[in-house]
Amino acid sequence: MNKTVDGIILEVKDYREYDAILRVLTFEDGMISVVAKGIRKIASKNAAVSQRFMHVRFYLDYKEGQTIHGMRTADKLESFRHIREDLIKQSIASVLCDMLLSFCSDMEKEVYEKLLLTFKRLDQTAKPYAPAAMFLAYILALQGMKPVVERCVHCGSVERICSFSAADGGFVCADCYRQEMRKETREDLKCFRLLVLADDAHYDVMEQYAEWSFHHFDGLFSFFEQYSGIHLKSMRFLRNIETMDFRNS
Ligand SMILES: [Zn+2]
Figure 1 (cartoon, protein in one colour):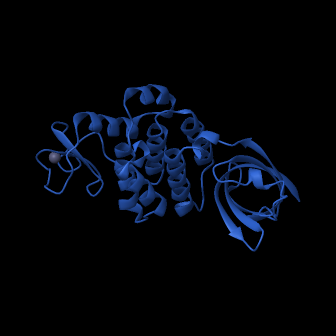
Figure 2 (spheres, rainbow, N blue to C red):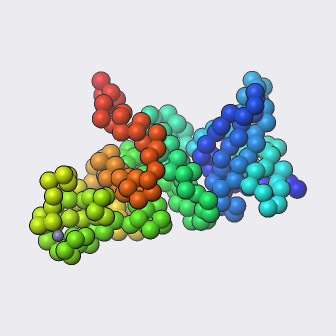
């Protein structure tokens, strides 16, 4: 059966000599795999649209009830060129894709829409960690890992909050603070709170609110690592480039 499906390519894996298997997040079918034959051949018409992060309309040989389908052809809907051309944006997008691939057995339709929106924002923004951290906060809530940011997780105090701890589950006050925790500035605590509580509709206000940095993304990602037990190579890479900061050298 022929079927047209729109999706975002999360992963491209080489398969046999000239073929690849694409992992694609779609609105209707959740996560599917698409066999893209011959895309490693020089003359391939489908090679240009079979790249990671792309938003693509696929024309598939669709097998009802299956999760792997053959690709006949495909059209580019959005290439997200600025993500592809920027090392930091590209690394962030890799982390988001890998995170979804790591747990995505029954993906909700909303995840597709949120990821698409996040990629559009990531493509256009000068503050890549704003949309990225917001998507991360959304995934944490969806997976039941939402950090507590309304009060101290231990004593319930709303005063003298000084740390945001993944091991503890959220905000910690000065009385419950332990040596091994990292002290956060008031400004960063506000940022974490905003990311966790902000509604998507207020994205523009949120983006303006702060100089969103890797620290905000990393702080939330620690929750994902803590509660899923999943450690991603792409996140290790992003941590490395952010700590070395060779972009400015
Ligand atoms: Zn406390």
